[in-house]
Length: 81
Figure 1 (cartoon, rainbow, N blue to C red):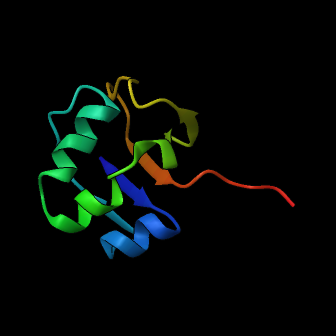
Figure 2: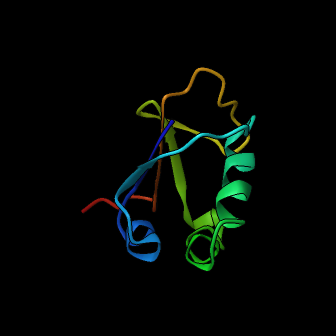
């Protein structure tokens, strides 16, 4: 699956996107797999309340299933103005 990182998430991880193989059942499981990789992922996912997630370009929750998902995007909440 493709993982996309935006804004400060991308800055902390150092990549705009990557393709990975994962056995994660939910977004939360995927986050745990990513956190275990390296310190930069741990830093990016330290506070999930400061993050939003989209599955195949639709806003979702961290407890959502990854079954059939091709793209996961992580980004901070957007503000209007």
